[in-house]
Image (tube, rainbow, N blue to C red; front, side, top):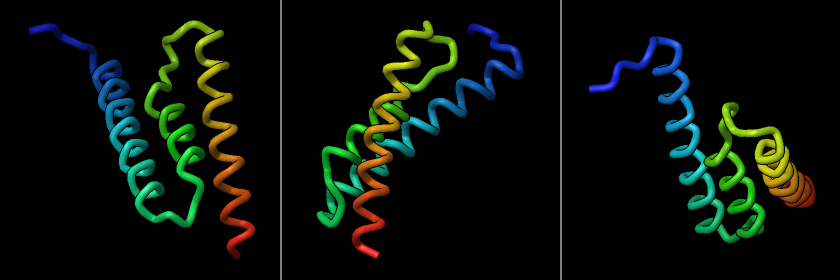
Length: 81
């Protein structure tokens, strides 16, 4: 068994839970049909792949996915209100 330090274990668990939550969010958005599915998927992919240990270029691309999906979801929610 590989030992991970306490902080590393917490980070891995947190990233795993973030990925699971992002997938559940995308699934819920797709099933609701009231928000744009592509935006939910883009947002969720960005969250699911987010990892602070990746190189800066990958983190920037990941941030763009989160930003584009999040902005479109926010726009749709604002228009619905």
